[in-house]
Amino acid sequence: MRALHTTKATPPRLGKVRLAAMIEEATVDCHGESEQVAGWFTVIEQNLVTPFATAILGVAVTVQSVELTRDERIVAICARGRERQPIAILDLPLAAPLPRGAEWIEAYRHWRGAEGGRDGAP
Image 1 (cartoon, rainbow, N blue to C red):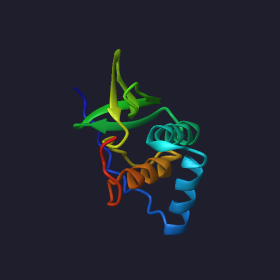
Image 2: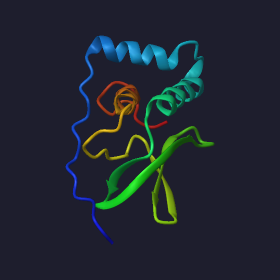
Image 3: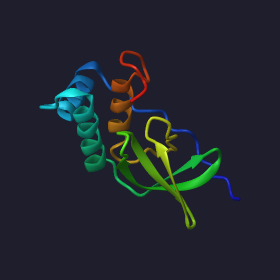
């Protein structure tokens, strides 16, 4: 196994005004948490540029896409060779340089409570 030797990326720091605007954009016209998660999935899928490289437990993987699971979790589809594995977007480590659109992951993490506020479990 070959390890990916990249530095861990510092998440983008979003100002309060920008963060509020992103939350509003992702959840506008959504009724209930299920629709809100679907709204977040839509903006992440539209804005996150894939594929991109990162490392899971020190092993190089390629994030090929994002998906919304039946149990309403947003996951990154990670690949290494022929192997594929979904990793919760809340748990996905991002390597430098950050992929374009990574700020949407950070905003979703904030909304989910990864930085305080809402409960972190879907």
